[in-house]
Image (cartoon, rainbow, N blue to C red; front, side, top):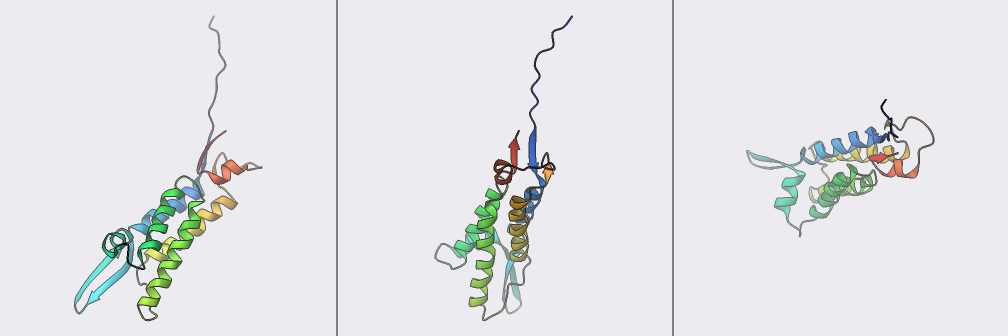
Amino acid sequence: MGVRGNEETIAVKINLLGLVGAAIGAIAVFSTWITITFLIWGKSMNLMDVVNEAGTSSDWWLPSILFIVGTLIAFVSPVGGVLQLAGAPWFIIVFTQQADGRIPSGIGPYLGIASAIIVLASMARPLGLGLMKEPIGIKNRLLVFSGE
């Protein structure tokens, strides 16, 4: 006769809405944010290109870094959406000021804003594995992956 020991089950809760928002943010980082054209030559730049080529003295550098860092944090916590929501619109404002009122034609900044909204919404109402029953505690709101 075998003795059955106490079996511990580890229940991991996953905020899928936050994960989807963070993934959209990652897609946004590698999507086109600006296109530089000169006569017949054109170059599309994603956010990593902007950071690498613009340099720290550029007006685009800080909003770009804010969005990238916010996206990385969003994979761990929906709080990263705050940095995303600061970075993407700020980038659009700086671009518009430097481009004589034109808005960015690339999809990146707009995906970035959508990502930030989804990530922040996932903090207000986490949706995913283990999060469908009420009440939802603060730990489950502030972390994408959490234990029981």
